[in-house]
Length: 453
Image (cartoon, one colour):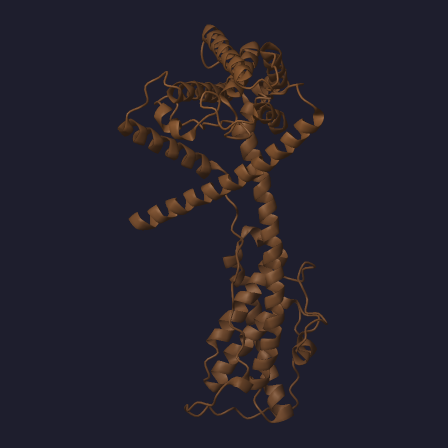
């Protein structure tokens, strides 16, 4: 579709500056709109807004010929279609004759042969699409084509003084109607999925950098058990082992953290650090809420990234399994506290702070990789969704009509290849601008919502 339209631009190229009678001037577009054409895209299914009037009229003649010959989804009576085809053919012939006089080097174009090519390209898709999408849908698509052709005609006539321009007040109303229609199209397009990210999380405070502060004496520690304390193994995580869980590996740079957590599911190790911070606060009175919440959030994010939406639950729901794991490990953490006191004669709060800080830095890097991978996947899915959306809303209509497939045998292959390459580059720029405009519309809608919420 787009490749064929690239040839329109090759034929439209002219050494002179924009010719008022041949080339659309955007300044006249608002003056040419009517109630019937206010919502139509002025460059409907064209590769560029620079496609000249004569090519637009040729495309209209060819596309309407295909719609008439297919015959099942005409938005207006066949006699009216015949009248429009003849009108657009005559306008194209008049402008091509004018172009030939203005530029002797312009290629000679066989109008009827080009209309046959456009009609033939459209008929490759139109019958099948009418069957697949249904008659009512295709009537709507053909109606959009009629509106585009009518706007092209009005635009040409206003620009060349053949029709009275719309009043300024009407222009503002019609422009508002057009903007609303474009905003609706943008709203119906697939939205880029939001990939959750925890953002920067505060690491565990390293005891070596904490300045001493005056506080009440820590609660007295209970006497140690006479028998040696045995720390129970970590056991099976809440919900059972899962092969998708990332495990703490030898690449963990913090030696003590690696020694304590190597081979454990990363999210389970973070849940244990959450339990450790809570126990420190109970045993010493020191506030560790910041670290406890940080490790719990990181554990939930890692669990979500490894297993996806468990049972249809999203990231927020991952706090449930993390809480269960923290409760399951509470006895192990309590035993670890006593074992450390019994072995070293000191409470383990400083050691635990260092170990969990090292583990969290390791998990932070891993969570960043999760976010990057999910962002790439979301971008791919959004790109595919946009392709399907465009195919159903624009390409299926004009794709069904071959998108105005226009070609010509005039000129050498090298010049056409160069024009096609230039057209593809311009198409990419147009698509990039469309994305920016769509995002701007979304931002404006959000601003309005916030203002009146």
